Length: 129
Image (cartoon, rainbow, N blue to C red):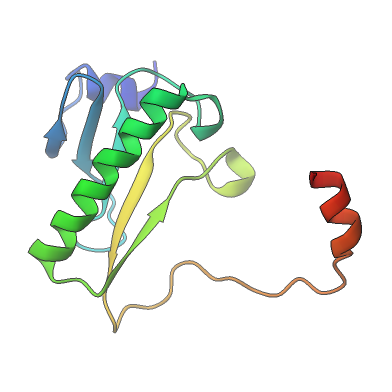
C-alpha cells in the first residue's frame, strides 16, 4: 500500500493543514524548512504525468492557496514549488505530490541549477516539436 494513500485514508496520522473531498495537504514529516508542505490527490496517481487533468488542476489550485497562506503566515521570502517524477528525478514516494517549501533569504540553496555545455539546441528542438 502506498504511504500517501494510507495518509489520505487516515490509516497513518499526519499534520493536516487542508482537506477537501479530492485533495489533502499536510506538513512534511522530514521538512526541508519550517512549513514544508505536501499537497496530494486522495486518488492514487503515480506522478504528475498520469494524474487526470481536472484532479491535477485542483491539486495546483490548492497548492497556490496554501503557498499564499504560507507566505503570509510564515513571512518567508519565497517558496519552492516542486514535483518530482520518477526516481531519477528524486521521487521517493510513487504518488503524485507537490512540495511547497518556504524559503528564507539566509537559507542555503536546496535546488542547484547548472549549465549543461554542448547542447545541440536545433536537434533538441526538432525532437521536441
